[in-house]
Image (cartoon, rainbow, N blue to C red; front, top):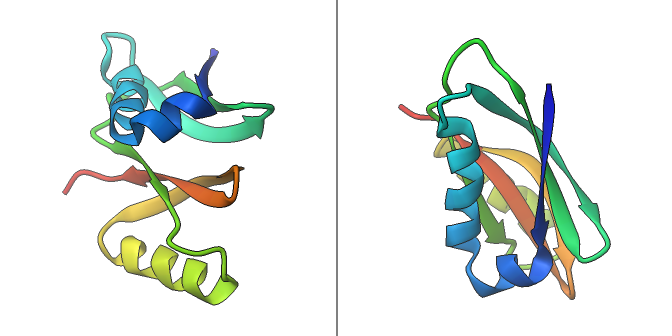
Length: 106
């Protein structure tokens, strides 16, 4: 079963950490779910989850890129990847590009 969670961009701008915690909690409920992707729509991000045979230990984190320059975005993705941050989606809010990372538990 596919579950869709709509998150207004205003909520992401106001408190990205809280939104990341809320999305992470979608995977931690009694019903086992895993994050499968996200799509940007008008004024909101739609996060997608599906049923999973195992409970996820991952955490979802939202963060703006420091720059829209392709070299800097690429470098930031690589730096975060080295710390187990896997880029799962990116989207634009106003003039900033945002990333949605899945951080796998050690």
